[in-house]
Length: 168
Image (cartoon, rainbow, N blue to C red; front, side, top):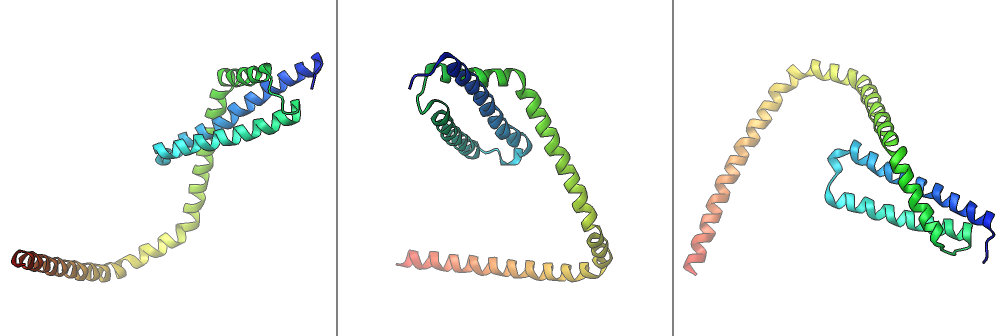
């Protein structure tokens, strides 16, 4: 389908905006990686990148289907790239810093709320601790004797099996 110059300019500007949205979407993953450092394993990062590209591909397909009736034009690909580069050059750093700050603040608030909620239970546990500690020590010593006995029995069994194998 043939688009007039105004429609092509609108398509170019909308692809620039789509590129900026793609960059912002990628920054969500960057924020999660900075906040949840414990879960940054190589396979999880690869899974996140795979999900990112699947979602972006489907989103751009839907976008191009609606904006240019599925026709992929060079200037639309160029506009998407320009939008991503402009976003990463200007707003990305501030967006990531603000996102990390907000999430860390929310985490601190949630931890404080949970500590306040659990305060009565910690007080009760502190009162009951002198009563429960001797019982737990007896249980632990009984379990350690049981474990030691189990290890001795296991060594004897392993030694017996070794002797049986040698004889056969």
